[in-house]
Length: 170
Image 1 (spheres, rainbow, N blue to C red):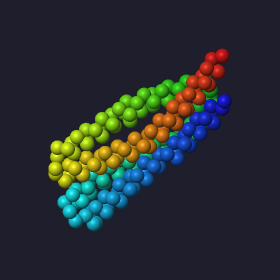
Image 2 (tube, rainbow, N blue to C red):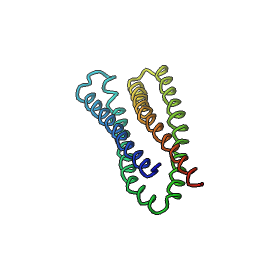
Image 3 (cartoon, rainbow, N blue to C red):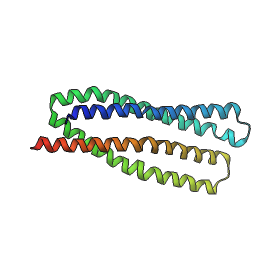
Image 4 (cartoon, one colour):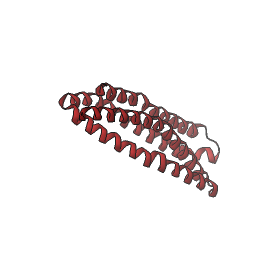
């Protein structure tokens, strides 16, 4: 198994998926612009700031992940050529840490935040609070969608790393 190819394929798949954060970010920004230009009701006007903030956050997340993974592709080859065993060990450590973070943040904290926002919706009637909670739920759902697929990819990559590590120890 060529672990360098697997690492590069994983990073390229991440490069494909992270622009979805940016795409949704732009969609939120366009929605904010639409609410600003076309919103006539108090509720519609209340969405301007929350969608602007959510769109900006999603753009920042997408851009950060895109450039991080773009630089990884060249770093992978250098690290692998220098010391294959050290490369596998460091990637295993990084992948394990990332998987733990996904379990803690994406699959535990985000659903709790979504449930909390939904509960707040039951008890508040002011437009800004309602718009903020609905926008927050929408943004968190986007993160769950994109990161759910990212989790599956890094889990598969981690399994490949474990197989290579096992072969290196022989």
